[in-house]
Length: 453
Image 1 (spheres, helix red, strand yellow):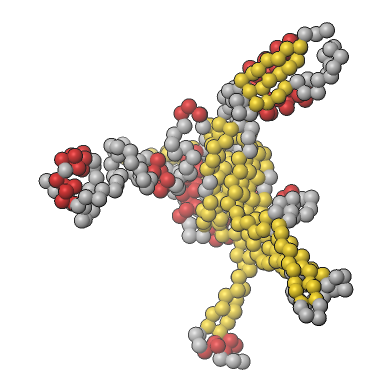
Image 2: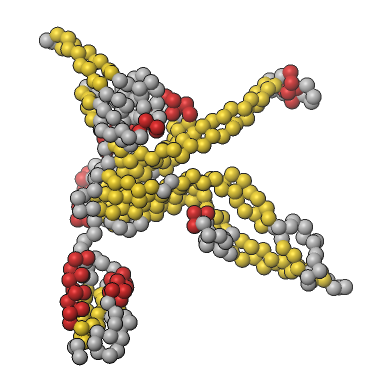
């Protein structure tokens, strides 16, 4: 008979329950002892440890596996910018996503940012500079640039070539700066999160509407007439997991699911699912007549309201280097808007007002949503306090960098932190400790809190 032993493995990074499940799936049997062991491992989540009972050769194999997998996981930061552009902005910036197919290359720039001949494509651009030695001409040739088809981004120095749909860190902000300058663009969401390699991160900024079912039962007799309502939340039926099936809430808004995996070569493989949805209408199911009675014990179904949700979703996988940005496009939508015009009051005259003094027009507006996804490494030992803040989180950085203090912050030696002192201003000013503290803190007291010598 093989000798059976028990050994406990304490884990530093791996999850004990996941490791125990893998061991139980990999090793099971009687091991020559006449008794079949269905589960050789048991997890202790509180201590993050795994206890294994098996022959010595199996225990040695478990130890080798733990040495390989119980390592500090790589962490990745993910920032996503959702940008909405109208057809006017698309034309101005010359974004043509069909031009991105099959193109490769990169773009590098120095100096300022200029946009020339937008919408026509730049094949050749000549720049002339004059210095003390005379006049020197520089020529840049190539295809489309980082801003899309027909947008040139340059400065004092620059090289230009084809673009394959990814940007590095500096190029992304050049393009975003161009988008922010347009009146027809809107950056409506900018989440940033940190997640371990192989784990799914979810950003959910949605409105939830409960799926409520209503059942009614009416009881009538010669003396009374009562109605009993039974309202409860229920799972949404269906098999399509993308349409809220098996959930108890309808939701609309912005959702982002990202699963990064870091390869041994330093490439970050990303599975990303951005979803943008909005409620467009309501529908009512059932009967609104509360006096409706049926012959089946006077029971009836009563109306419930459900949202009509417009969903735009992309499911994609791609590989990126540290600090690079992927641009995801194609989430376009065309809406028709009706505009009323005319002379006030006169156009409201019955029968003839709208014909003689007013008018109506319809305009189709096309909008496209771009998603800029930036990924990079976030080393656990060197994380900065603002690593989870996106670029435009100005107020958040004031807190992390010490310019603002949280309410109730009583740490000593921090400038600008107001503590509760019930003494009068005169007594506070006469206190040497108060005077020294006020002089040492570079803080200017607003009136009436004036510092007295």
